[in-house]
Image (cartoon, rainbow, N blue to C red; front, side):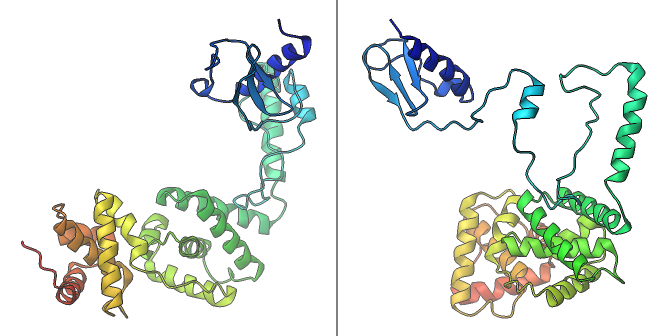
Length: 325
């Protein structure tokens, strides 16, 4: 027979453990087979009420310490909001009216009130941008999100790019240059800073800009903002190129080994990292019976077939590697 305290424990167990996948929860005691399992929320333990066996411990409650029974209570008791983000011109700190046409209880707004809500929502969107500087920043960050989405970049790269762009705005580096070129240069710099470098050709294709224009803007940012970015290496591109060529991880590992041996012999000194990476992939793919043509690799790496042939000849002669064609 469970006491009143145990019943209260069981009630809290239902609330808290519902957040955990059902297949991960033990349904019976492994010792006695009893289904009377008690959740002690003070000690963070799950134990059997019949035999006292501690089944699991060190549970962490990921939810709040309070309980809410409707939307109004949930809104009034919550003490935090969405995390701050540099991808919004107001850093995500402003309020926003949803476009779902539902109230706080989840009920649909009547048709007679929708026109009024639409006007309120429209003016709310307008007053979020108070001046020209905020308007330009809003447009630039939207462009940054669009280009990043086309390139498939993760959120940390986007946040870093947004920070770089904001620093450029603070130092008035945008004047005389297009917003699009500075945005593209910020993304290129952020990729290198995070350790996920992308070629200028990729950034130029996603942003629909000239590669030389992005390069000039990037050099301007690195000089004025003192970014001090380390030079990219061939190994930084191998995983990305292998993924696009649909080669398995063994080819990537072998290509990285080829680059390492070539670097130790000083062959890669003064050579473009993308060309070296492309040649290493060409060698590794052929050695592991997953051949790719030089044209296929050149299209992915953004280099010419001549570059791949030249790097291949230098590396193969130094490492005594011969590919049977």
